[in-house]
Each structure stands twice: as C-alpha cells, then as structure tokens.
Image (cartoon, rainbow over all chains, first blue to last red; front, top):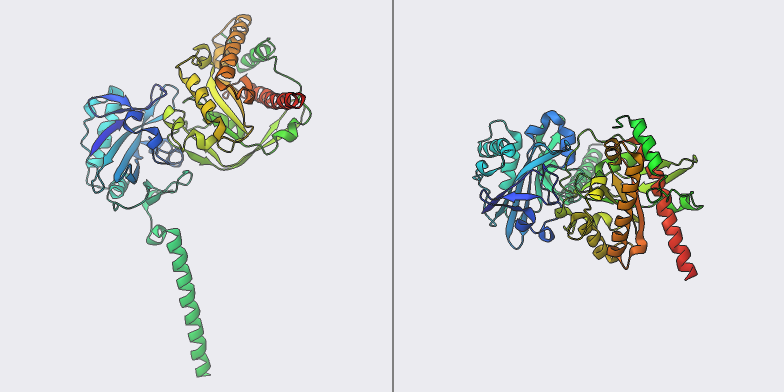
Length: 218
Length: 249
C-alpha cells in the first residue's frame, strides 16, 4: 500500500500537490494525468456541496475506488472540504491510496506533516476513518466502499447525478442525509429489466392460470 | 480608486474605445445571428479564472453562492443562451452536453479532461485573468503559454474549423485599482498586443482559428453584458474575414 495526502489548492496553483508525510510533490508525479481513470476527482463534486449546503460541508466524505487500475492495482481516494482558497472557493483535503488487488486502505498517515492550516482537517479525517462507525454514515459509506470485491467496477461511496462517468455506489444523498440504497436500487439496470420481464411473465402466467381456474368453476 | 460599479462600467466603456483595447467593437455583421444559432461552446482556462462564473452568466444566473474549486468533470444540464444585443436583436446559442472541469494542469492533461470538453465544440472560450495578462503568464514556460501550446497540439483532434476566443476576466478589479484611465488604457493596449502576437505565433499554423481577446468581468453584470456583445461580434467577424480571405485566395 502507498498513501499520500492530496493537499488543498489554497493558493490556486496550477498543479495539485501531494505529500507522503515526508515529501511534498506535484500530484502528477504520483498519479500521471495520462493514466488517471476517467472520472477521478481530487475533491468533493460540486453537486454534493450544493445538496449539503455550507452547514453540511464538514460532514462530507467523498470516496472513489477504481479496481484494475494500472494492471491489477486499486486506486482508492477519500476527500473532504477543507476550508477555502484565497478567493473564498471551497477546497479539499484528500487521501490517495495505491493498493494491491486485495488490499484495503489503512488510515495511518500522520497529519503532523501537513501545512498548519490543513492539519486540523487531516486530524478529523483520519479520526473519522479510524472510528468504528457510531453514527457517522459518511465514514461508514467509505469503509463499505473499501470492502467491495476486487473485481468491482468504478465506484463511489455516494451516488452522483452529474458525473461524466457512471459509478456504482452503495449510498445516495437524500434530503435527510446519506441513506443506504435499497436492494432494488442496487440491482444494475440490466438486472432490473430482467427482473421486470420475469415478474411480467409470472404475472401473465398467474393471470392465465386464474382465468382457467375461473372457467373450470363456472 | 473607483469603487462604484457604475463608475467601473463607465471606465470600461471608455477603455473599449481605446485603440488596441477595443477597436474590434465592430458593427454586427449581417449573418452573425444565424451563424451563432445552435453553436456549441467549450469553456477552459486556469483555476480561479472564472469558468464557473461564466457558465452561470451564460445561464442568466448570478455567480454561484457555493463557489468551489471544481474537482472533476461534471455535466451541466443543457441550456439555451439568449443574449440580447445592443440593437435589440437576440442571439440563441445552444449549450448541450456542457461539462464543467477544473483548471489545474492535472485536468488539462487527463484524456477525459479538457480534450473531452473541447471535442465537439464550435467555439472554445479560453478564460484567463487580467492579472495573468499583466503578469505576462503567456511568456515561454509559463502557464498560459503552456495552455496555448496544448491547444495547438490538440487542434487537429478537435472539430474542423473550431474557433478560439480569449476572455480576459476580472477587468473590474483592475479598473478599481487604477486612477488614471488613460494610463490603464495604454498599458492594456500594449499587453493585449503582446498577447495577440504570442497566441498567433504559438497557434501557427492554426492562427486563423484565433478570433481575438476581450476584456470582461463575470462579476460586474453591466461589463459582462457589454463585453459578451463584443465577443459575439468579434468571433463572427473573425470567422467572416477568414471565409472572405479563403474565397479571395
């Protein structure tokens, strides 16, 4: 497992920065933009910020998982809003992991290596990810994402409506907060169509059978 | 200092009458309305240059209240732009399949990044700031220049005949920090001329795709409205000139 902090772009730099706890370097040196999976995000999608509103920013954790990346590796990331930049725009602090096919992320990076203004956000992020649940639905959704089978496709902890890429996700953000999707909601589209056809056939068969029985009775 | 929005707008109006700053405020060439109808546009540029604000203005919305560093490509619902011109005519532009994306070089160089945004566009708006202009960030090795080089490399992969227009945002802040309109006009004329030469040389042999640069403010609605009128005319005018030259040649 290799892990990096993805630092908030507070100074509106042209390059995003990453830190392994010892060295700070451009993110592109860790993750070549040309190899970056479609839909990769260094922060929280704007649609989630809009849905939660400023009062809910501190709760948001957005995670992505790309299996089969660069061979059989898994790319896993989690990000949270981390204050604002020099123009007052929301910026993010993230954790990026490059994992083996069956590895799970371990949240061991030390926040002490972060710039002072990012440290508190780092401490909270690590604490939440190490926590055993206890009502933190966002952290729970990230943990469940990290436990998906090795061969699952691109996935996010929470469903997105405006993403350019279609992601599998276990949770959806509703008016009451983060909610686990129902079984039906998690069936892939083709599966749902097959199930609907099957139900229609069974329904038709039952209708015919009932009709036959009715005829016998009469 | 000129803090009032109206004053800022008046200075902007004055500036656009300066030679080299706004002499391209040309009459609306016949056919521009038809030409713009249904055109697809792409918006790219460095981080914090005003891309989100431009998209909001195009949708006739105020600058987003939740302003964030865009972290990934996000789809924006298709929308129609109805731009009222000063002669009471209206231009309709269709923005279909719009993708909003970050300005960091990470997103420029990702295959699903800027290239995906620009792929089907008829007109690419490159948004930079007036500080990028006065800081000469278009010189060799610097960010804006690298973006132009990226455009030059990618142009063969984009829609044939795609046009590029530069929007130089945040002119309102520049105006408000100056007291001498004449001096500001002269300074801008010099900087715009240097930018123009650079863009044309970097984009070679595709320099004909470049339709010019326009000073704008996404924040100041009056300036935005006037500037976008100039932009529409400039882009069409440049297109028209190219067609005329091609026919003559």
